[in-house]
Image (tube, rainbow, N blue to C red; front, side, top):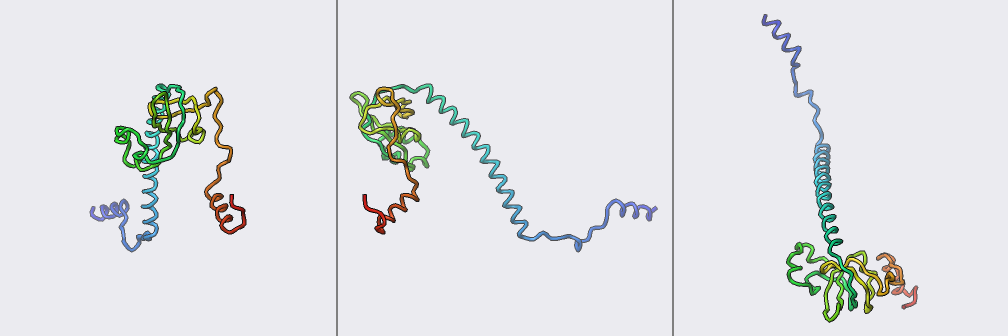
Length: 182
């Protein structure tokens, strides 16, 4: 009986010898750990992106619901830090700390007798003419759209924008004397 039991155990559970184990190199272990971290980070960023997308859609709906068309005289426009823009302290306090240091497109306008400081949308900032009267769509202190006074769409500056590299190349050519100074 004992003999049969030994044979039965040996058939079900083979003996394990450590000499037969193949060791995985350290490089592969590091590779799989980094791969796992990257997969986890990708999954987390996916869900955070979905949540941010929902928030942005809700905010856009609010902006669309509250926007008004107003006739404004644009005095000045600049990209400046939020705390230096001259906005009310309540607006500065409500913004996240990291956003306070970034530059935002700020437009100084005259609406009737009041001079206001508005934050413009990045998409329309280049289209806003300075020292001209425009019909603007505003929502609170946020400028959403701009048209010319008589309904014509305001055209951006005549010069096409150049990339930083092209600007740098032109600057170096002027310094080297290959191009005349403007």
